[in-house]
Length: 272
Image 1 (spheres, rainbow, N blue to C red):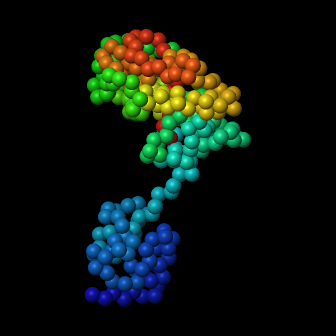
Image 2: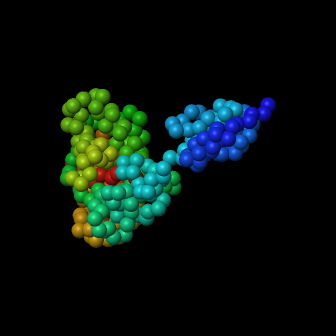
């Protein structure tokens, strides 16, 4: 089969294709259905602002714009461009020093192999119970030894938040105050981040210990609260009556299982 397009139609198709930077060659020739993908039509489902292959079910779809910085509260992989100890800024960028006109949000304390990062809040929130009841949280992993491999800060936090709300509704924060305090936290410069902050998992606290010098250095540069020697709650659970707490003592990091009804400091993290 051969299709001949008029000059006007060829111009229209060419302009339409070029405006999206889509395949142009397919408009100038007749192709079999299975060859559409070879000509640049690589989507098998329809998409917004896409162009369908004239002779098949394939679509050419515009590439999504790549973020210039991280999206706070969401993993975009941007953290691979950052270093632990750097300042995470309100625009999602990372820097060694304060950037004029750009507000700092946190300090980078963990970067995963997938380019997902976690940044520590610039302030602690005080002392709270992990929980006021002795319950094994469904779907929350238990760690019988130091939870240095647990980096799921926000997954842990969401699990506890969801469980407690299903059990106690608007009174949930009375039963799991540490988790609800970080969940309801947002710095005054970014109120839209409320609900995106999390209680750090054990592995993230361990990363903070390993990189304390660089983290404290950045906190000092922007005149914010250093790590200190307080005992901190992690979001990692030991069992029904105990959670994992963390204490920095001189150069050593000490994890210990503590009663959930014990007061310990909390300091949120945010994904980016």
